[in-house]
Length: 219
Image 1 (cartoon, rainbow, N blue to C red):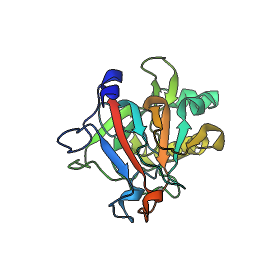
Image 2 (tube, rainbow, N blue to C red):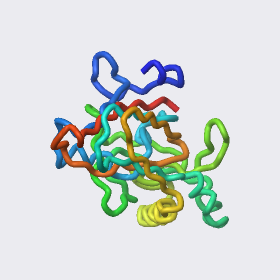
Image 3 (cartoon, one colour):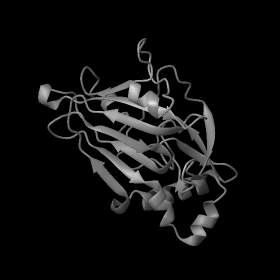
């Protein structure tokens, strides 16, 4: 927690009275048919809020002997690979975001779990193409996970475009996986990446336990 506060401004993620900025990702004491699947879809942390997140960090307290990896996608690299006409087409578009199943959900994606008390009718907008707030690099932003449409475009066309961008972005050449070991500290840049958990069943024994405290910082 001290490290996170040195890096930035942590977002309140839970009802923990001592550390509300920490959310615990675990496969212990959960509904194995629901909660373990909540992050098993491509998404960008906090893209359903007006104020986006800059960095997310996970610290591996316990790591399973198998499974539990996180996949990451390089959205800046995907944008750079777009043909010129596509870049010009999407340059000034604005995407509608709402917590729930995205219109560009990928095959195998699972239903996201809303934050406790979150009003799922809350709708916000973000640019489809963003510049990184520090580097200025252009990147695709949150093209699935919370994307529900595009301002000023018919819904069918918006869904087609978002899915087309997803098909390009989630190619193997833009995707990396991280398998956790105990004491790993992972940080990623939310403006230029998307990520997805891999589904895990409830831990049958200590060697299968995953415990990852998570902190996201305001953008």
